[in-house]
Image 1 (tube, rainbow, N blue to C red):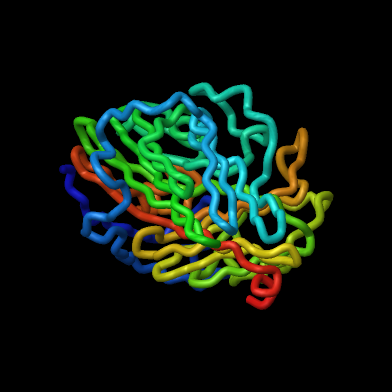
Image 2: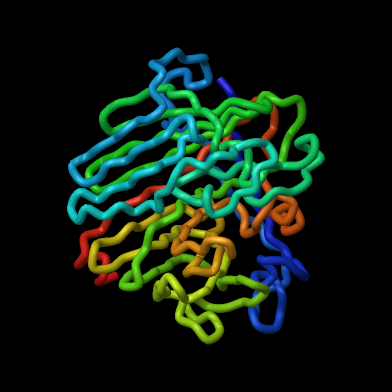
Length: 348
């Protein structure tokens, strides 16, 4: 069996870039000292039961549905195991932004508005960048999205699937229990040499102006070159979802060194993301209220637990926040999503 390793996460000052507000003096008051964080528990996780690394023959059914008494999930295995529906039975709310399947999922694809729908997984980068350790340029939003995954196991409330390519096997197990959904991840390498990576959960939400955003467990945030304390962005309260025609767009980050959560809540209920900062030490928050893309602006929000407060692997490596996956090793982590009742969502 492959070994499960304990990785290390480093953060140190950066003079420019999206995450600069996390590390510069002045506005952000962040420390300039180099810090060390533990990133993985060195235990064998019960993520995938049985030999998940073996070749598995399953029925050729790319659309899979999971359902509990509280929620229904729909997953398109042929489209990077994208979760296309997350529906709250109590309110009828579809939490994910939907749209037609993107026509281009090639190696040279540009991830624009047509692709920015549903819930994808980004690995080993988010934005495209050069990575010599991987042999050159990394695809926009990584190798996983838009490409076929293989189903390993399925049940009424369980879907286990994996992507295999470029010497990497990336697995995700989705399991429902009432109002909660646990997404458990593993990534393993059969490559000849260690490779750096970052991961981001790319969950694009459909929101309303009556919704509010709550964050907990994050450090000082940074976005557009500015450092700020949530939710007080210059001239704007970021906890309030803006209207569709506001023309506002912002990607911001914060480190999350311990237990953290982020949630959207409103009159039609809430959706909360929980994770352990020891495994997932950062949060990305994408706010787009009619500001992107320029050719056809969208109204969307993405809560993105991530392993690096960076837009791409190159930046993560500059910050010292990349992770290294050695041949034969397996890394594992998880994120829990919970549906909230309307009253509960508004109260928090």
